[in-house]
Image: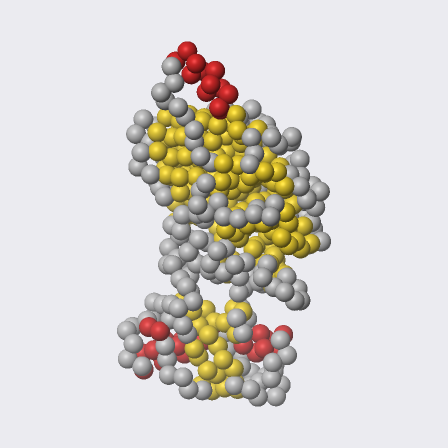
Length: 424
């Protein structure tokens, strides 16, 4: 059969894991040159015929062999050398709602770090300060203390009374802060010293008892996050003791990278994954105090994000690409997909914490993009608003996608994507 023919017919099975939208599992005969619009019209008709609720407002996307169909079926199958003689199985999923722009949080300098927890947002900037905002866009605190740009921020704990967070800076230190929510005041409880060059990233472990940092000195360091303060000390001894107790040294130092450790994240309480400008990703076993496994790329890595929902790692690189790695792969290529859509260096990436398929990225092309890892050829959405390079992004709070840039702004997008899992 001529795949370019408009007369070509296909036998189609339509399946979905979203049972409320299921249609009869029988073969449908359709023209080969249909795209998503025509498939949506067909589905709407089938759903109405099946007595389902009126779904006219619901739009669907279609997957063939786990990859989104972005062209006509004929083109998609032709590119993959699939015969038109076979019955084709298409899975359909409800189309994601677009994120909505909500706020622009203006700073005095470049925003190089951002992380949300519950209703609060931490930002780190090139004017050496940390800023605290709420998710409604209100500025709560400017926190001085570092003497060089703040490159990483990480929430440790947060409740109605207190918040604890860490900040990492090019001044070679990591600071642990305690925030009194009611009084809206912060205190630097510990200064973590040990890195010999600027610290570029910080991450807290799942149980929030330790944090990991990566530095330009090529080292990975692990630190305790426990706060120690003895309120009962006599005041004469208190100041000297506080200054002494204030400085914290690392629990352990792990050597193995040859250049800047640019990204760090915990997989579990005893496993850390790092990426580096030395073109490698390393998994560290803290119980053994060494490298568990490693894999190499052909470019520097600027950032990584690990998803506990799917066990995979997404990476950002200067060749404009994002790559999906599965560290569990024993054979073949560890790179499962490559995502090309940015036109400049990709600086930052972050998985959704509630949807196993979705992640966001930010690049020097002033763009933030949302991706579904099943769609490597095109992002799901572009989040427009930055007027200069995007340096940081975050999706820790499922309701908000955050990005910071060298336009001195944090952009806040409201995400309306429901929690999803394999058993929807």
